[in-house]
Length: 226
Image 1 (cartoon, helix red, strand yellow):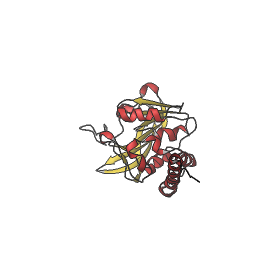
Image 2 (cartoon, helix red, strand yellow):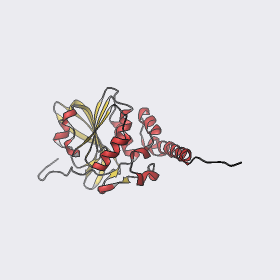
Image 3 (cartoon, helix red, strand yellow):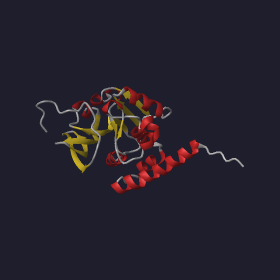
């Protein structure tokens, strides 16, 4: 009797095993406690949202290098940022650093609408392809620091990477009372931070020192002081 093995089924099974391991070892052990986020990350095949040459390592506990000197964030970092955003079902979210669309896909499972900004043309194309059919996500190809004011205002700003400062242009697209989560680069150290926009202004508070990819285009302007 000849036995034929379906490699596609084997690949899917291996992917599922690695995905469950990612959730168990990288997320649950690092205070990613929002069950909606855990379910989404346990369900979505992360390899579908990264370039073909890094799909085999899509579930590693590391940043994934992509073209143009960019990288895709660690799963734990993305999970922690989304957990600290305290997402609500009716939220409209501005995502900066869409990369291949993975974080947008997670958000789409939880919130009402996602506008995902990506400035790298190849990554934006990958995101559009991966998110085709996801009705509540719009991918905008634009400079990361510019955001997508035409589609705002937003309840939540998620910056899926570390930056030196949050530009006024992005803060201005967030509603009063809106939440902001981001990575920060401070004296060469990357941290995760959360904040809220109020009538009195905007500020961030770091909650975890962590490896985090650095996004381009957010250098502190000359003469700027915290």
